[in-house]
Image (cartoon, rainbow, N blue to C red; front, side):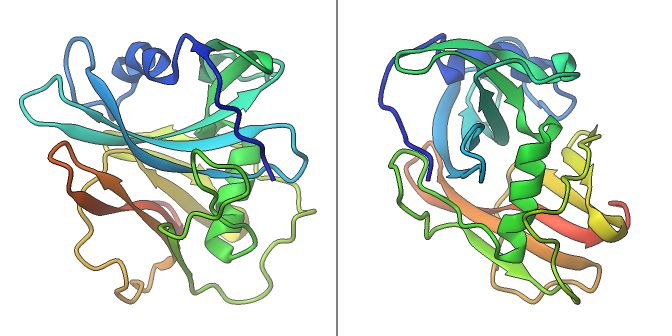
Length: 224
């Protein structure tokens, strides 16, 4: 299990995201983001080398608050060939310099997100070591054997649009991250025929209420 260090980060994660978010095609704000943490969860890297975090942030700089899902990975050295995906570097009070990447571009995150959907991995609390996050709900209706942990990760070649990010998945499927979060009326509803699996979670709105949203969808073929 990953160990959560409660220590100082320079710059902070929200400071990094404030500089990076406006460059994304799915960012709906204008000017300088005003970000507040609204939720999230973590996944464990089986090799224990890469930190994997899904951060939910709400931007209140626009006419209406907008909430985003931002997966990040943290590494102790640069990821070869991923300069375009670097969100920034941070000085960690315990671990030293950390390279923070857009997690959709990191094959370790892509593999573990797929494992979470299929039930081979468990969501972890964002702030506490070795504590499962029971708020994260998953469903999977795939047929046949799921890829094992030894299966090589699918190379991450994501495509961004105004709503999210789509990654390739095994067996011709696509894995879509819903970057702009919207309320999901019934997260327990049956999956549509084209959807093989999904993940939902809840986050805190500016008024203090809890909202549940669809975080990720695994479906056959490309997203329409």
